Image (tube, rainbow, N blue to C red; front, side, top):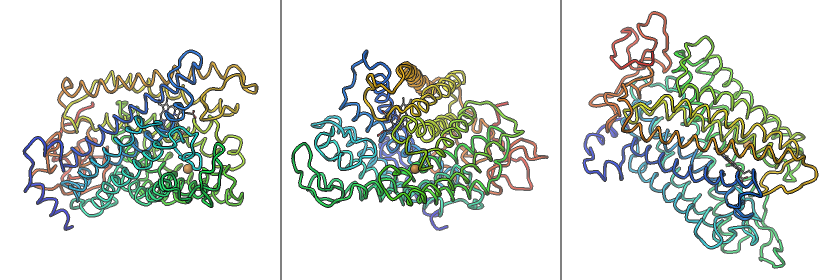
Length: 585
Ligand code: HEM
Ligand SMILES: [Cu+2]
């Protein structure tokens, strides 16, 4: 492992001393992780505000006038894109990936620290370009987060001039940033693990983030080339995706392009993207459940293989997003089959999570509450996915609120619950402080019950036929009046959930100063990041000597062991030599 030596030397030779090198142009994976997370959470809050504005319009269409129809489309687009890419992808990989991979693998840092630093600044640039599109003539694009041409570049769509180009450029820059980070995550996992950390001893968090990064490296290029081709269609008048159309009485001069080609490229990226967000969540939630149930994860090997299988299969299901696109029905049959096959490894994971809890010594800590909440919302979103995966069931439900309910449940709420749980779980290590438990529990219950109140009724609205991406429903004949009452109730729930985010932020920020000092290993966890000599870990993570791993990541409640956890770096014969803190009685 040549890289260990290089990272080792670097960490000692250039210990940064000035403020700028330590906190701004830092090459320390932990600082970069925090930079990534702060930026991601900041834009995520913008997306949250946009969703609140949209909900006020949908719930009380005659009372509030915050958004006009064009803005509704612009907000929906920015909300969707920010949530999926700039918040969740960046936070799970750039944030958690950066923080956890070197610590959990027993490395000093990422293997290419300089490129890692560039990654976060290029990510910031992509965010600034994205946000700048709010201020350009015509405003941000209103094409929907799927950006389908021809409508995305034709006049008449909000932001068809500047907005869509800014979006495409921003996505291109994001992908450059992701690639620089992603190469680091993959190479570090493969090359810089400490002695004894075999692949099959890695915590599932690392497996999930590792596989998600590989998916990203394979899937983002499809989006990258589509963004370039569409930029050319929009600026130079090429016709990659633009067919011969007349638009608002004029001939924009395109001929021979294929809008369906864009849909294929977009979803060849877009479906794996769901798993780029889901796999890190799967991995992290496994570790939270095991740690807080004081039990080894059930079926570790199966969990690893399921992550690999899901990752592989996620590349052959993309056209289940295109059943209504007019493609050949036999094609639909193929994609329905592959989609249902993905349910198998996914179900295995769910069974294993539940079996991990079975007869565990369950501590209902705040991270554990969020982890259990995830199992509920994920099963819920997964089951409605089985409906939508079938061509004949999808046709009437496509583009209704059933879909909005489904995807928010499975790739909105579920990963966000894991993000919250993970922040609560690792906060003591990252900051050296504990947060307020009561506020944490209030935050959990408001979020968990609130999201059900938002998204469960949406499935019913969808079955009634309420269409998605509509600014207002008006007095549509086929919809019963109860639709309006339900919409008002959903909006109130959405505002409560948004309010609970304020409680969360307050808790996290105030605890930085007011929180109790955290012991080095407050949950009694086995993985390496809890065994660092300093809390928070210092530059280079491990002091003079790298850890050596002797066991897998899940030695909880081993019979005969003096404690109900045995850290990975404890030799197999000497059962309990570490003096790390052990709280959470
Ligand atoms: C409390 C939190 C949230 C609320 C209240 C909310 C609300 C909304 C609303 C009102 C829409 C427009 C629905 C329509 O008119 O068709 C929407 C669309 C969307 N949301 Fe959310 N959302 C939330 C969180 C999230 C999260 C965490 C994600 C992350 C995956 C997400 C991803 C999306 C996507 C991809 C769209 C589709 C955009 C489009 O149709 O182009 N949302 N959301
Ligand atoms: Cu999909």
